[in-house]
Length: 213
Image 1 (cartoon, rainbow, N blue to C red):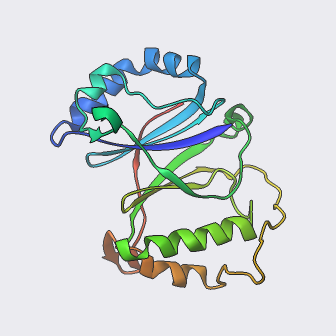
Image 2: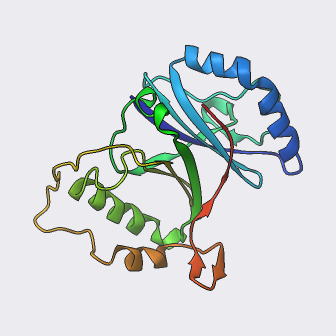
């Protein structure tokens, strides 16, 4: 199974029109996605930002929006002058490899997408620590948890309730553990907070799920 994450950007002022166009196309479009080998997906929004997570049976699957949605999206330049309506987010951390979605659908799952902003000077450090965690402690808390990165934004996806899993054996190939015991204290300086609260800075914001299957 292949897991992918993408980022898109709605033209400012067209957010409601995009949501309507997506809802209008949803039924036939889901059928097309399944025919392409995409077995599940979840789409989240924060203001004009759109973030996609999907699982597919083939590594060849690429994300394509319905034509009515593409008309409402900004584009990124691609090779050969190609316009891209969605850009891939790099997998910088995944806790494990979940079972195919069919094995998880009967548990009343909730798809959760969170968004955070990294300080540009801290991106390499953030990836370094998460790679260490991934290799030193594989499958340690939720096999559906994954983080994708594009520019300074990081998008995390996971499901609740947590599927059953077995802790993995360490894959560490370096002499001593790197993952710090005070993980959250070490991670906090990597972020640009969204806001402040009585409990401290808000580092991750939960996004609105606009479609999932």
